[in-house]
Length: 112
Image (tube, rainbow, N blue to C red; front, top):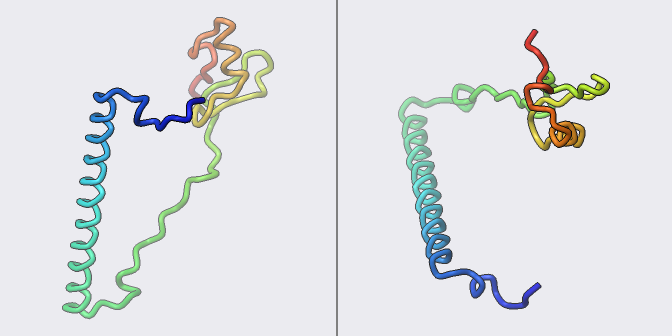
């Protein structure tokens, strides 16, 4: 591993591309922040004008889908007990099956 800064190992073209990407990200974040401030001001004016209560302004809670069990999309053809929803990192059995010559279609659970 080199002790030199990353910036000295990158080409000028790559540095310019990174600079452009950072500038674009800063503009987008500033625009989002301004939109948020404008929205807050609009809400505050409406609250004052119409004398809304906090209960009237409460938004319904969004349900979290984290941890929700998804139906299997792929099944291990060797024993049929191991399944994968197709989300997240592919399990090793899935990678091994593909490496052994099976296709994604071979591993797909048929629709019910």
